[in-house]
Image (cartoon, rainbow, N blue to C red; front, top):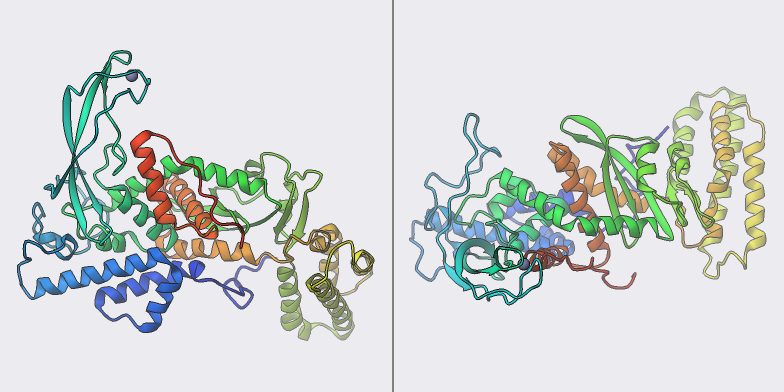
Length: 507
Ligand SMILES: [Zn+2]
């Protein structure tokens, strides 16, 4: 029996602001748009980090813009772009900026965004060599222009027209041009807005409508929900080597937590898997809940300690010479307590006595193991004798005879997992519980409740990539929106992705 209901309760000690953000930022942003944020909410946003603070700043700019609009003062020529309601910006469509359902209205064909009128101009320096073959190119024969709208440091927006030189390459026999770091090829939304919005959605749980209002509300051209989803998908494609690397680092780590939760893709039941430790967090969305996803993730024998609940599917993971399992003792204690509270009162006296004796012994054994591990001078070598005694007590409990069904059932489980209960005594780097995975999977659970998950397999893939990158960078103390923006900029300019940030040392 697997308890899912107890998630989010007292066993989640040390719930940090970043895992809480997924359900807390969204209502705060709504409050900011209405103009009634409390001091307590401001404190929460502060704890959630920089991106949440930027979102709050944007919400307040939107409110100021809305208020100045109701006061019917036309914006002066020097008004910052972000303070001008989009409906009053040049090139804006009339008819308000109210929210509407994502996607084109029924019966309407999709349409390209209308072009913004440029507020700034920049020229991209000419090339000397061809970006595809490296041979030298002729002077620019032609130029083209491209308009990109993006967010500025001061949270206002600007539409910049880039003049891009085009050169003839003799070896490629085609026109070649330099990349523009401001946006991905063909995109009209700049990389800064893409990086920030991806984090606000996949990391901090803001809805697509909220992001359209906050971030793209001050753009001259409307950004549709479909347009946003599409640009995030492209960003996830670009960043997929980072995602693969996170998976590889997880597979090579000394300890790894694993957990899974239900997920829906296009109305079908799938599973979100999470493999994580202090440095990496890798999500995978897969139709399977059994052994297949585990086999597809663990492509080679695992050589660390794999921490998970008592689910039998994990036994399929091939272990190397250093590989071991640790089953989550919080799960075990929770289930014992459940029997003791709910079933014990209904047991006939002999069974009740049998259960109570088993319960007390097993509880004391687990407590003794944890207490031993928590000694400040603990090392497996120093306490080797004590560890042997604990193992003997476990085996005695597992192989004793019982008449109570619950004691029989749990003793059978102890026999099956006897080498997976006290691994944390031989391998002190491993936790004796899976709280870490439950904490890392919780933000995804919140996103699931809010967004009904993904509408397509592609959407699920985007979600897995961007959530993994956000959570991993967060664990490494790296500001995710900045790292993603810089990575997209480097890739847009040169076609090469910088390395996945390793962040500060484990702390
Ligand atoms: Zn060339």
